[in-house]
Length: 421
Image 1 (tube, rainbow, N blue to C red):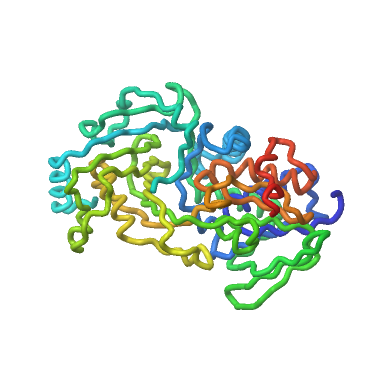
Image 2 (cartoon, rainbow, N blue to C red):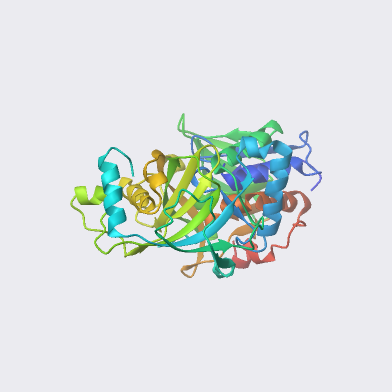
């Protein structure tokens, strides 16, 4: 463990970048002896979910093995590297709204649009998190939501508790990647890994395609390979059984008070989003919809809707496509309860794939740690809590690789070897 190490990290998302960062901060890291290379198939770091997620951080997130450590590390990273300025780290309020939208509100919304203004649930909360919701009055500073439509507000956690925070995911991931690079990590983008050769004693080489030249290249004398390729982990290491679930999101240009809001919106039975009515389509909603809304730093509001599995995972994050109609659905649903966002400009319409570790048709939690082959490691399958749990995962992977075991948290339940990976 003390000698030369040639470490290859497959994936330039949150798990790859935080792992690289903490490897360079480990007491045993020696740049004269240790080389660390990130191979990212897309054109830049954070091209997938790590750049297009909401960026919510929470002490009530899951899994419990990672959350407390990761939430603390987020605060420490922000304090050390000017996180509030660089990646928008801040605390924020969080709650859940029940709303009933009237036909009159729909007419008002449609009239506003005519005057020239624009206008399967993601698994963000488990049962333990839902139990923390406590009924209370809608805070006075949530002035960007139509109070007349709100039937109930439940605050997450105790009043005034600091159990929820956020970062801008793209800025956070790329900043951590940059810090790792400054410490000696080599980052190669547009480098799609096609083969990892191993023996019973460990990795031997990593083969990848340089997407600029189409040349097949090889890294030999590899001592460690960490597969942290998000939803593409299952492509690189099939037995990991990590796959992608597509999720659409929209980014509004708006400066509003910092709250993360889960919604449960009851729409009129004859409600049809205008873009669908104009296309002659029938309404698609089920009477109730539940988009999530996160006010973000840098003058943004992020909103996401239901996931879908209609389009298979493409070759790289550069190839991910979004459906305009799905994004427009999110915009129209948000507009029914927020005139402010209904009139806001749209900064981005997008989609990404969340990495899910699937066993027997159900999610089985993230994989973090060693595989059955010495020197081959996995950090993937974090679904919608990747940004939240990235720092803990990266720190633990640095301990696994340099010390042979994790010491900052007990993650036996996340051991890939339990699943014969």
